[in-house]
Image 1 (cartoon, rainbow, N blue to C red):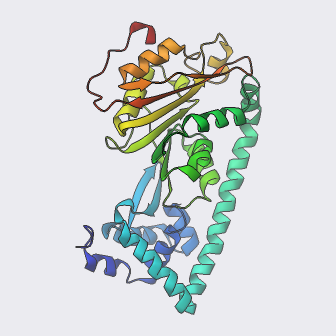
Image 2 (image 1 turned 90 degrees about the vertical axis):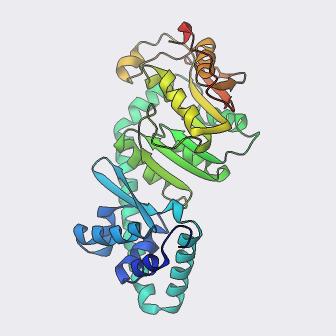
Image 3 (image 1 turned 120 degrees about the vertical axis):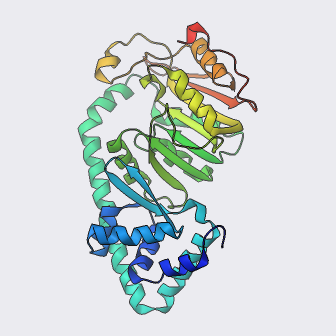
Length: 330
């Protein structure tokens, strides 16, 4: 066994030209099975069989996103996957035939990237008016981002989870400073927008996952930093979302919540589907304490009709010792 992977299975998996091409493509980015079939010029069932062999060997892993299935390099493969990519890069240098195939695949991959970007631009065009209307009510995004980055600058970000990634902006902003980022969203269309925005990042550094903030699909203590940027006001009950954030954070890990202070703009419920009209500092402090966090002083950005707040907190080492959420937080 090599790092838990059977060496004979690895070499068998790589003993086919199509699987070599798939492995090379996955070194660049995560791809849907249908996209791989498009690049390779093969039927989807045939490509799926090749994918199964690579996954069984521990070189790749599948992830379902609605009706789509995405494939990426295996995170658990570690040095073996890295060595495979180095070998494939050397093969491109030494084998003109393989190099020509890989170059053709990359041209088709570039076309897929352009299609993703075009779809994202179309989505932005359809929703630009709604977002501009909301942005006009609060501080400039650039200032919010600057203050958030400053609030998290005093310690390494490590493995970062961006809950409710939306367009992927937070993941893009913090990518240069985090070891690895997982960007999660419940909305499939938003995930596809985020994928287009983030596809320039190394495949090993970024992962996009469909999921609900009240039931995160991750193991306990998986992350060092969690961000919820303009997400929590969509929660009828924020407590389960914060409890889940605490669960997936390591002891001492940090959470940053960007949201609105309490306000009376009732139109946001119908025009933008906001469930909660912001949060008071007392409410947020109680929610964070109840989830097992030790909060720091919040920051306020008062550049508009809506005040944007940044609440940060650290997960206590023993989250089992929680203070019950007070009634004022509900």
